[in-house]
Image (cartoon, rainbow, N blue to C red; front, side, top):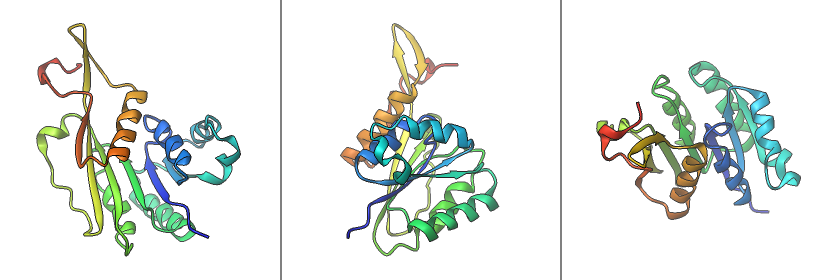
Length: 188
């Protein structure tokens, strides 16, 4: 029997919830890094395929700012489910070691794996070079804003998830969800 593809999502109980549900619909097993078990359980209840919910979602409840706990929980997940085929990562810049900790566990794969690195709008202008393992197919997604009626607003969770799903479907190497122009119109 063929193993189901495995995804690890950081931000899945917030702005990437719809991405988690979409991945389950695509036959993935999904581990979700979350800070609150209750929010994870509520997210699981909202799946369109309730029969699959207990077996398709796995919580990794922790604060990813705690590198030691993140390391331990990722190791447990890899031991139990294998190395992820896909990592969808929305990690705040206040936790610069979190993504390298996750990637360290993925570099043991012999087959290629994909990383969708989601970043805030200001990261677009920094153009940091994220070092990734050789077998990593790196994709970068910048979160912009929306300009409507000469006013701007940040993206909704729904818009963000739809943009990330589009990147997964189309395999864009780098894209902006929303817009970054004109920069001076961004929300305050």
